[in-house]
Image (tube, rainbow, N blue to C red):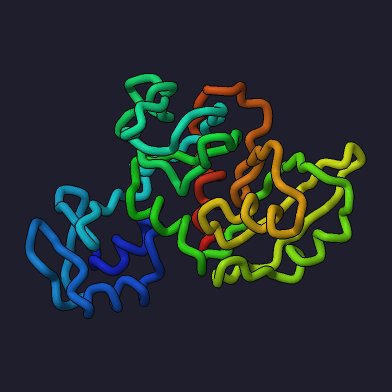
Length: 233
């Protein structure tokens, strides 16, 4: 059954129907290779819909996975320095998946993977405000210095949002951020005089790493995917 293209895009989880109509008005939506200029255009799953060059995946075909990234792996498809990438760890059947954001070479833990490029982009936008939770072990004991990070710090001219930081009984830190700037926790904590020794992500929005072994990947169920999409709206 054919439906209006704006509804198709909204149902895929990319944006709201109003957001889809705006994308159409801006000439960003293609159907079967042609720019669509009106939301009064009907499509079905046999049509190829692209936004900004990325194919829109229908909601029932969207797959999202939780991957436990090991240390000393780069979040990229190929590293010019010859270091191991996440795709050297992942089984070949998952090599077509997109990663959602990045974890740096030394950071371990939860990395989301998906077959939906538009969803991957949406989940990493700063205005999505999706909380990412990390456990950090730092060098130093003067925890009063963390107030700089809690208030929002500016380092080398770059502003970082306030971080929620809890000191755990073992003196490790539970840190929640919502912006996702490159290496923000390492940069800000070093600025506070508490450089990071180890960093491990345990949550991305409603998704938890739980008991996933290092180097393993697990597909999320539909309920969790829906919760993840709603967390970015």
